[in-house]
Image 1 (tube, rainbow, N blue to C red):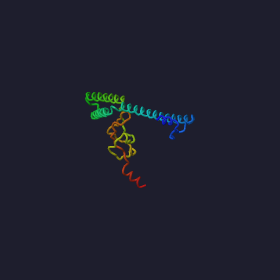
Image 2 (cartoon, rainbow, N blue to C red; image 1 turned 90 degrees about the vertical axis):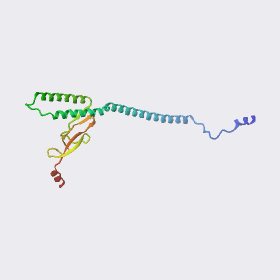
Image 3 (spheres, rainbow, N blue to C red; image 1 turned 60 degrees about the vertical axis):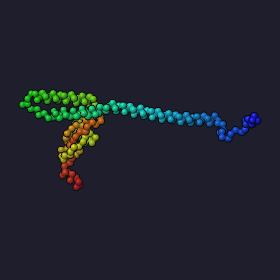
Image 4 (cartoon, one colour; image 1 turned 135 degrees about the vertical axis):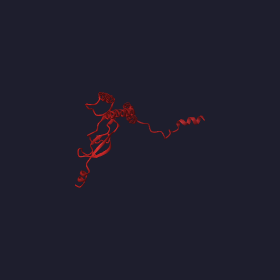
Length: 189
C-alpha cells in the first residue's frame, strides 16, 4: 500500500479545475460583484425610505382622522342646534323679552360650538349659489329656473362638513336645471 500512496502524488491534476486566474481577472470579478452589491444596497435603501414615508403618512392620517366617527356625531349635534334656532319664531318688536334672550343665547352657543369645531379641523360650507360638486354635494332634487345657470346649487337643505379636508357629510342640495322650453329650443337648433 505504501507504493500506491507514493504513486498518487505523481498523478495528473483533475481536469475539472479551472485554469488559474490572473490578477486582472480577479479584480474585474470583484469590481462587478461590488457594483452588484452597491446596486442591491441602493435598492434596499430606497425601499426602506419608501416604507418609512408610507408609515409616517399612515401615522399622520390616523392622527388626523381618528376622530372621524366622533366628528360625524358632533356635526349632527351642530345641525340639530341650527334646526332648533331656525324653528324659533322670527324676531319681532312685540315678542316677549324671554324669547329674544333665548334666541340670543342659543345663537351665542351655536357660534361658540361651530368655532370650536373649526379650531379642531371640522369645517362647514354653505353651497348655495355655487356650482354643483358631486364630491361635496348630494343632489336631492332639480328645479327648473331662469334665475340661475344649470348645475348651480339654488338651495341647501344642509351644509357640507369636512374633517381636515376629508368629507364627513355631503350637503343636501337642490340644483338648478334649464326650463323645459329652453331645452326644447336648444335641441331644435
